[in-house]
Each structure stands twice: as C-alpha cells, then as structure tokens.
Length: 259
Image: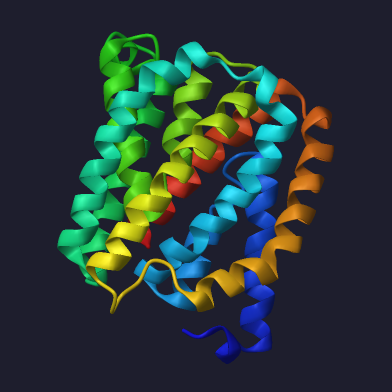
C-alpha cells in the first residue's frame, strides 16, 4: 500500500501503533501486541515487517538511552550465538516463502504455541521446567533460536524474551535494560538481512522509499509513547510489572495462534 492511499482512519491506527511501539519499549513490554496485526492489516504481512523495523529501532534508541546501565550482560551473552542462528533460519524461511501469507501464518501459530509452552513451564517450575530457565544451556539455546527465528519472520520475539528475562529473576530495571540492548542489537542486525531480502526479491521489498517516508511521519508519535512509558515505569510495583508481562506474553501467544 502506498502512503498517500491511507484513509484518515488508517492513519489514526498507524499513529496509535507508533505510540504503542514507543510505550512498549520504555514502559511495559508486551503492550504493543496489537501493533503487528494492525500493521499487517494496513500494509500486508511481508511489507509490514519491513515497515515496522525502523520504528522499532527508533524506539529502541530511547530505551537504550534511558535503561542501558541496568542490563544484565551475563544473560545476553549466553543468548547471542543462538539468536544469530535463529535469525539465519528465519531469514532463509522468509526467502523460501516469499509473499506467501498462508505459510507465514502457520509459522506464527508455531511461535505462539512455543510461547505458551514456555509460559506454562515458567509457571510450573517443576523438574522439566527447570530445563527451560535461563541459567541452563538448553534454556539459552532454545530461547535464543526461538527468539531469533520469531524476530526475523514476524517481529514477534517480544513474548519469548519477556519470559526469558522474567524467569531469570530480573527486577524491572534489569529487565528493561536487558530488553533494550537485546532488541537494539538484533534489530540493527536485521537491517542488512532485510536489505538482502529486498535485493533478492525487488518485487516484494522489505524497505522502500514509501515505507521509509511513513517511518519519518510516525516518528514523533513513537517519541510520545516512549516518554509516556518512561514516566510510568517507576510508578509500577514490581509484582504488578511481573504479572503484566506474563499476561501480555500469553495474550501475544494467543494472538499469534488465532491470527
């Protein structure tokens, strides 16, 4: 869809999505669960993934600027090689699927089921659940590959990473700092990957002059959302923050499954 063809209602939805992107990066992760389906409805599945990436990176800049000192790098380093492997797998899958929306919908269902399984194990914390907590090698490997794949295919790594950091026992400052650095780094890595996908299939570009113009137009609303999130975070009790992350992760998983 070309930017000039957006109706006033569609512009309102786009601006609301932009504000939610900013708020979810600096306030409560997961509050942007409606952004992906809204953008897909406006622009189509493949194009919306490319349009959303610059918006996410811009919002990541606010989060890193404000929370960078609180990151738990021990948790992040354990993930990095596995996330890269998952991103490579996801990029290859995107290239193979091309513009086929039905196949990508099935992948979203798979990601949603994985998130629900992780959520159940996080809540149960029984013998088998311990294999998926962040201090285990199996947990880091599974989480990293799943997050990398999800972020490459549908920008849907948020609930996976939310459960990872929450299960690690991070307080909300450490959570937001780690969350900020993780997505800033890996969203930047996606730029050349998406550029390569555009070069390989110029008829279905991930980036275009029209999409980048749209990104510039909605940037002020991303900033508004980011400022609102920063204002709210210190006012949220830790228990409320943890519960909100779990509920929103479950909601995101159900959205991925149900479409």
